[in-house]
Image (cartoon, rainbow, N blue to C red; front, side):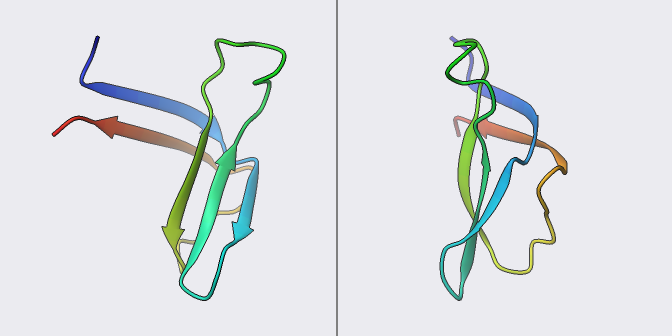
Length: 62
């Protein structure tokens, strides 16, 4: 197993969580293609991302 995982995807949805943060989400094809990776991550307000933006999400063991 690797200590690093990268997900390249378009943001499907930006949710307003509260006055401090939003949630960026991509869950496309999860039900139809079990190999598709998705993300759901909270980020501070002012991030500037919108639905459709292509992003890279990196998770590293430190």
